[in-house]
Length: 319
Figure (cartoon, rainbow, N blue to C red):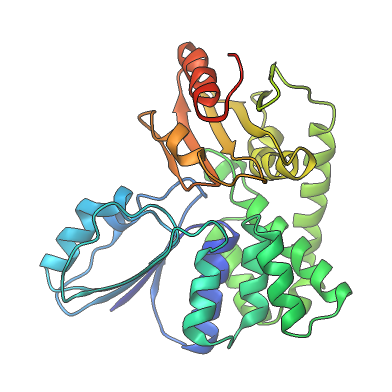
């Protein structure tokens, strides 16, 4: 039996789309919301089974990964987050890069030598890697209108993955993957009712966020707080990415209130210095990510000051 384990954001979904469109394989798929990355623990593989893991932090899955390898399961791991110690095991194939202009979809594109490059570009746009995606699209001969469509699609797929629970999403990430796979080509999906629903939700949620102002604003960083509402939980990631583009010299933290009074946090490094986000978030128990973009799944309200201090220490400015 084969298992496809993938992040429910644009990068994870588009990475798997490339693989399964080019290399069809019957599999059991395991995914979830964007922040649900401890996914290998759900795999019930037996000796001789195979697993493909895409866009989920190896360090957050180290224990179940070690168990799978020891039990004779072959694991192919492709990711762009800090991996921690990569096991030296004959059952593991690891393609890992922490380069700030790389995502999992682009790593898969390299492996497939551009076999489904339209989905690699879509995934990169969704992962807020606008410049690498634009360069790859132009180099591959895509027209400006097609590039704009791929960017919108990537952003909307990524938007769908945000929220602390599946109830907040417009579509379960696996159902969205299935719709994209059946469409096969981005343009076919762009003409579907599923995309129109996703596009409308994105536009409405982004409009609701337009009036927000920072609760903390320094020259080097700013902190925004979103309310405890489904639209806010869905839009937090794309709102964070839009802030980076609007204020490229500034780091940003976007806090979304959870039902329990704590915060869900998205941190983006300045576009002009795409480092430090993971260093800030990893100081907290439920934090992690990569250099340019990271998050904290649950920040107690009493630790808001500590987060502001961490941002000031990393990027400068007075808390």
